Image (cartoon, rainbow, N blue to C red; front, side):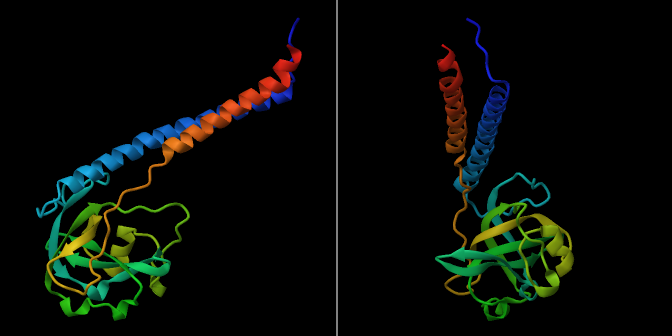
Length: 227
């Protein structure tokens, strides 16, 4: 006995299974990519040292733990965010550090205080070093554009910040500081060690299960009946 399958139901089911399997495969690719990032991060943290970071040879995909030093420029600081911590709304404090051949943006960590209230101005134009993780910052497509004329900074866009703040030769990374040569107060620098979420395996399993479920439903609905 020949099996007659409904055209539209079959077409939509096949397309649905293809889409779900594609989503699952994409999540596996993301899993491999994120696993590589985490491995690089782990290697950077494990090699924690006080060596100066080689700015000239830094690549966008690099993660380097080390030290940078230069002239502290709190007069050109900014607050990036907002960012929630312990159910409080605050911002990341970003302060430029000027060297002879480059300017480095230092992320000193989270604060709930206004810029003018922060204990950073006593070190204006002083020589300071910071240690931490150097990495190129990122953002997603939903992050609003910066509004520098209102001192609203949402994107950690190094080139944009450097242009507005008149910073020469910006380094291609932001340093997420954990230690400093000078005391600011008990809260700075306060960056915790960063590691991105890696839930892509769960997502991949979910999409593949959905594809299998759709195939089973189709089989029970149309193939079993005709068998």
